[in-house]
Length: 66
Image 1 (cartoon, rainbow, N blue to C red):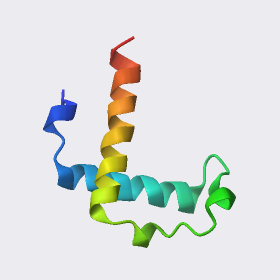
Image 2: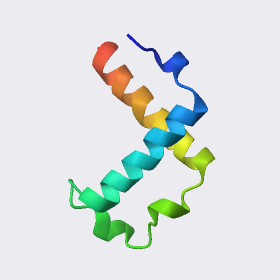
Image 3: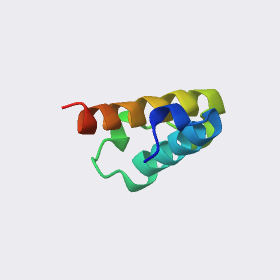
Image 4: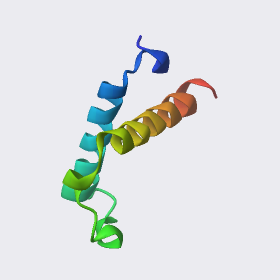
C-alpha cells in the first residue's frame, strides 16, 4: 500500500487540481455557489499540491489511525 511519504509534490498537485475541478464542476455537496469566483485553472501547482497533500493526509489519518 502506498504511504503519504511516497506522495510526490507532482502527484499531490495533480490530485489537488482534480479535487478542485470535481468540487466546482460536479459540485457533489452543492457548495459551488459559495465559491462563485473560484476558477480551477487559476490554482497554482504549489497551492494544489498543498491542498492535495492535506486532503489525502486527512483521509488516511481518518481511516487508519482510529
